[in-house]
Amino acid sequence: MKTIHASAALLCAALVGPARAQQTLHTEAATMPSPGTFVLLEQIHWTEYGLNPDTGSTSTTNIEWLHILQIGLARDFAVEVELPVQWRTVEEADGSDESDNGVGEIDLTFKYRFFRKDLDELGTIRAALLGGASFPSGDDHDFSSNAVSPRFGAVVTAIKGRFGINQDLLFRWNTNGDDDFNLPGKGPSEALMHDTSFVYRLAPEEFLEATTGAWYATFEVNGVYESNGDYEIVGGPGIMYEARRFAVEALVEFPMYDGVEERAEIDLRVEVGIRFSF
Amino acid sequence: MHISKSIALLAIVSSTALVGCAGSSKSATASDSTPAADLYTATASDIEALKSTEPLTADRATLYINGMSCPLCVTNIDKQLLRIRGVSHSSVDLSTGKVVIDMPGNTKPSPKRLADAAADAGVTLVRIEAK
Image (cartoon, rainbow over the protein chains, first blue to last red):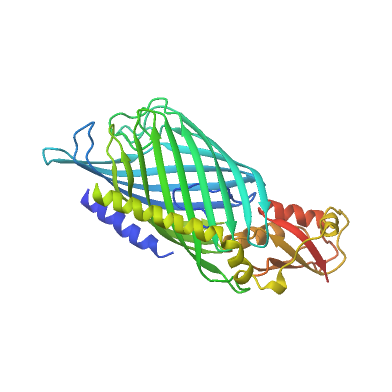
């Protein structure tokens, strides 16, 4: 398992070299590929969880390698398919640990942009509806539930000059969540997720005719409220480079509010990603 | 828990600062995102002209685009414009929101077709200047 961890870490380091425009790692954006355009995203999410009061385990390391494909179907309509491969190590109260890997639930999301107002050369305000479901991957290592869990929500994106903000709100109806290892928003309870991301263009200060890429500083705040009363908010800074055909990004998040009693709380989350448009 | 509270406080302060900056972005945008001379406000007749289905007659045209907020948008616009029959080349200037297209052959697109292509790319065409 250590070899797998080392490989994943190496891959993380490699991916840091080349991110995703105005859409940050966790928060949705009301932007989408144009019709007939594909966007491939490869992301690694490394999450360290603390004590799980439900199972008694003292810590959990979860690494997710997400393969995401976005397809522009029509002018304001796109679909996204997400396949997560996971590695997990759980440290029990008696000092022993247990590692496993598998394939998580497959997410299918449709995005319909119902509002777009372009303010000037760079400025825009957009809003989109999101709808979809998580499907069982068939994995029998507790990485996937055996149920279809629908979700729906909305997202608003505003960009003005060098500043951008994305705000989403998503409800997930967990029809048969996994009680054995309860990931945020993916347990037996229903979940309401809210995500906010701030984006600031660091460079160039002004776009020039020859500009082919831009650096952005990001800050994300991600919250999950579950119907069992658990509520957790994490957030932190990130960096993103966006070129004309690819983007790379990284994000580090820390606990901001911890009101979790039915599952392990997040101690630290590190995410990196690369995106290609073709 | 103290660490969590400190980080939360730092995050809130950072967020507030960013929101504060965003609130004052109008003046920042006007002065440093685009040279003032290049700013163009579309008139009602510009918008009306974009509804025309009559093919353009010039071999080259400059398109004034709004909402082109990132380098990735450039690729989207390029792709959609080059799919139009008759458009052989496009050159996007992100600094001014202008796109120059070449249409050397006999087949040329109409303003409406160009406006549709821009909308497909997720941006708004506000004026066409044929040369």
